Length: 240
Image (cartoon, rainbow, N blue to C red; front, side):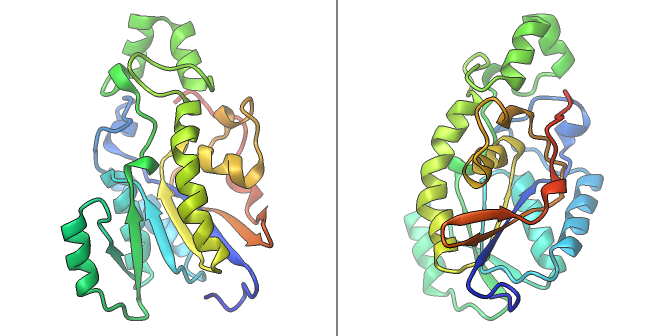
């Protein structure tokens, strides 16, 4: 536990670095694409910003761009993340059977409940092409609405619904146990988490802009979250 965080815990939210499809302006969602060279540099820069914090546990999605961001952050801090593979009972048992953690090791829990928003038929599509096919009004509603779903996809409301139980049952439990938590994830996942941390409304949350690879830090004490980096996000999310 970090010495400066006596009687409290810390949670750091990190959006993954730039991916190959961020670069090419395509809807990604659950498609498993890697980071760009710039995305790797963003993760390395984030690691330096988080260097003074000693994390006890990490949570991430099952998508490689988030997992790579997380492992780069930990590697630059000389930490070894050990994936627990809870979704595979035999694999998980084998892992735990030989899981003797040193002081530089920490458990990583990954879940598809922490995946990015599922964009359905938009996945893989160029965003300008989506406007040509479906119209600017519909695409804007899908991208900035709370209840609006793209064809065969999820709304932001759906993301909040699937993320909330995992946050309450797993991540919040770690914080209550005075563990410092690192969450490496995706823009819409982290917006859903921030509804719990900040109390943002359904009207506000679609417009939160989270820069890639820039940590948002919160202190948790006696059931209350306080943001230590309020300048790490804005409410002027552009239509990238």
